Image (cartoon, rainbow, N blue to C red; front, side, top):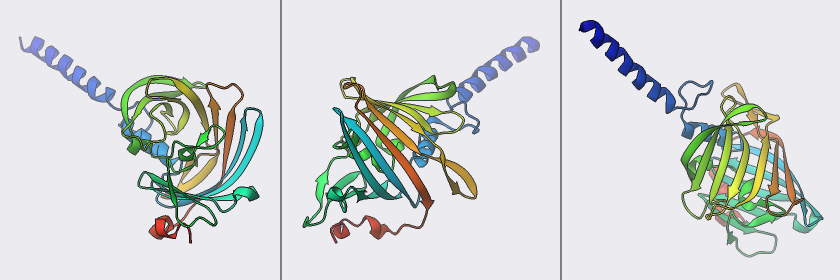
Length: 254
């Protein structure tokens, strides 16, 4: 009787152990959960405690080519984007602060509130070029296994917590091993996919004396109009101390 009881006990313990292993993402990072995976993927797209980088954007929309060069300073979710080129938009600024966004340009007396969802250029929205905060802006409603170019991923179905997020719904492929986002599909509230994105990470930054991958390219393609695409190249990422005054709304037009 004791022998049968022990067998039953080991069987129950095995089931419980399997359950707790299952609630965490099967990555090389011990027992990391899905929310933590999402936070790590945000860091690789600019959500650091003080960082700057440059962006070069090239877009094709209805056969028309467009270009823009930007400089971004970020601290956590706050971002300040300065337009460097071309000349007709040079000096324009975007400020993301506590999930709110403003636009300013030379000659404008005060900043104008805008939405991260508004189109910036081509297929890119204002929110696409700011520091990413999917972990704070979305809830994970479901997950599944997936792959991108044979790289094992956790596919997260994300739903916006409120209307200030850049997108209503996102299907997001996060690498199990590297903890970076590799692919995304963007959906309306009704479930219609309207654009897709892929991500590359050939840049590197050093965090706590350890090298960490940082985004180098984002390609955003329209799922509705064939040929409409925006390529965003990231360069010169540098960790730095960033003062809170950098994101002071009152100083945006100074």
